[in-house]
Amino acid sequence: MTHRIVILGGGTGGTLTANRLRRRYSTDEAEIVVVDQDDRHIYQPGLLFVPFGLTHAEDIVRPRGRQLHDGITYHQSAIDAVDTATNQVTLVDGTVLSYDVLVVATGTTLVPDETEGLTGDGWMEKVFTFYDLEGASALEGALAAFDGGRLVVNVIDMPIKCPVAPLEFCFLADWYFTERKIRDRVQITYVTPLDNAFTKPVAAQQLAGMLAEKHIELVTEFNTGEVDGTDGKIVSYDGREVPFDLAVVIPAHGGADFVGRSEGLGDELNFVPTDKRTLQSHAAPNVFVIGDAADVPTSKAGSVTHFEGDVLVENIVHFLAGEELEPVFDGHANCFIETGFHKALLIDFNYDTEPLTGHFPTKVGLPLLKETRLNHLGKLMFQWFYWHTLLPGRDIPGIGSHMPTSGKTPVSAP
Amino acid sequence: MTTTTLTTASGVTNVELTDDGFFVDPSVWTEEMVPELAAREGIATLTDGHWQVVRFMRSEYLTKGTGPSVRALGKTSGVSVKDLYALFPKGPAKIAARVAGIPKPKGCI
Image (cartoon, rainbow over all chains, first blue to last red; front, top):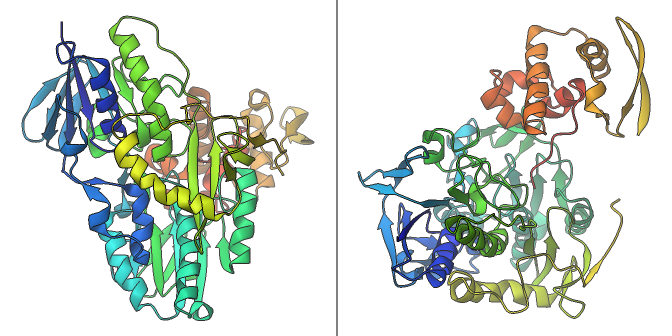
């Protein structure tokens, strides 16, 4: 009998899962369908560089269907809802797809409307986001026209995709205005709901130190209740105000809308409750989840999705064979943090180990938690690996899905 | 970790709190402790709204193993985020978690 596998989402997770499964099963053994609402696959790490003119929209977008191997059906439509009781997905174009295994890979959705005033007066004029392509492109013009004043970078609420990206934006802004020789006329402020620059203690301390060195003001425990584009200020629920001339806001994130319309599939934020070790959903045994769509307690990041792919595909194969799943995903995340002036630092962590110093993946690898030119080159090179290795579902030589420990220096948290 | 003495209607109890004021062992918490725990957070008068949030935090923790974030609380507790801040001005998720005797809500990563 031919297995019918439906994958919702043709981004990082959906594409690499489809391609890996296609290699595991012949077309007689499994039919694989990928569904997405549009045909624009965006290299999301590139969004950070667009506002600074370091890359351009056309350089980071490719058609979704073309990233899929032969023998995978690409179906373009928005998703209406999933019915886990009848194993069916209804699409907005009226198609009904039945599945033996469903993979939810629909990532996150920005929900700027959840914040009072964010999309009101001043939106896309003095209030921007770089978390989507339209915002990142519009911000390029606004930054170029900015000749001094208060730049505020504000994270509305966690979780967000790539939690280091807002910090990277601050570091790059510091570099950008230095290059333009107007850094002394620009006040940069980073405003976060967290109690430090980042969530993990060792990295947070290092990143807070770097903000201070670069004269970027840090405002913590700020829960934004309102963005006032008319008067140019963000206001917290406890009544504090931060004035701005240009605001770069990272809106709150949720799961995909169809998750909310699918009985029993998601939580209150439309993320899908998922076993953090097997990647099987709690909603039904034949529903699996990869990437940002899952509620697993690790970063929402492409590297996590990449490392999950290996475990996910093995567990789908086990499931279809009637075997027990392997609880082996360790929450591995790996992020280059661009720090400006052609340098970057690298962090590597999982569910149990926070980012440490040392080297990755072994003692002779890239330096961890340290600003170097080599890490910056690593970050730039990664785009090639993304299209040519990661999406096709190949392993990157020397980098397995589990977090390596041999090059790491243990430290006690402060 | 510190040992804190709480005075409740039925007497005096010692509880262990973490350095940032959360219960080390949530199972020793009782509703009787709520008025004093709230007073320590600067809440002099406990309203029905406070009780609604505290009981909701407690039941979320018992079913899910962690307290909800403010945004999740605003969507599920029946109290809007604005009203949550009116009740717990210094941060609803954190303060209500201390009063409800549950661990610090896991920040997202």
